Image (tube, rainbow, N blue to C red; front, side, top):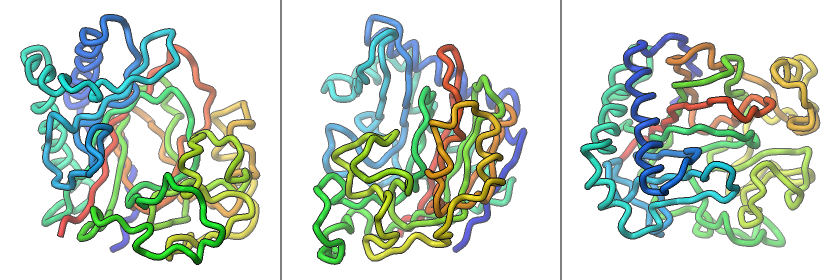
Length: 326
């Protein structure tokens, strides 16, 4: 099934936006109580499919305290902290529910999406259900990528020949019976309303990075040396894991598309035009205002709109992904 990109400014009411803001900042306060010092909360995931302390992924779409995933950094400190790595953290969250009830907040978001998505033409009936819900306050840019199905060999070294890989090398048993459908983003508390997400025409059925302006082993914005298997870079084939990048143009990005992308950024080093080789813009989803909703097909390449990150800016967004559970 094909999912057209939806862009709906003003989708959420001021009251609904305020409830999401209150939930995010209540979690910040709770984590500062846990940490004992001020923090910057980067990721607050109430529903997901992986966890640092659970090597086997749960794919039931149900809230679990022990699967709440958090990433934050103490102010004036560089190292990210994941409190769920502490075995007492899930029980601590339960004990602090009088301060902030994470489970209740999660179900509020689920019900809100169930109400709002059909209003903008997105079918959430049947087995099409959320499999990831998170709030982010990202203070960095990241590479063009797809989300969705993970290959379970992504942290292994690259093979000498991609043809040596067999389907059992990349297909995770956890993904059997799952079809990734659509995903979306809603700005909740943002400083720059011209910020947003670039949605490209190109698609790929597994979660990968794409940047034909870099060698796979160069520095990337996601400089994950252990994920070379899922980086498609300069000189690489666009075929991998039995799939091919759809709609790849095999030519430089048009100047028109590049100017549109960069009109909100004075620093072209973040996204030189060479990094857009093979790509064409489907749409630019600007934040516009808090409560804007945009939603796109899960296998589309996308990236943050390049911007100069300011120290005091806010970029709190609600991000969700849906899949068919069979």
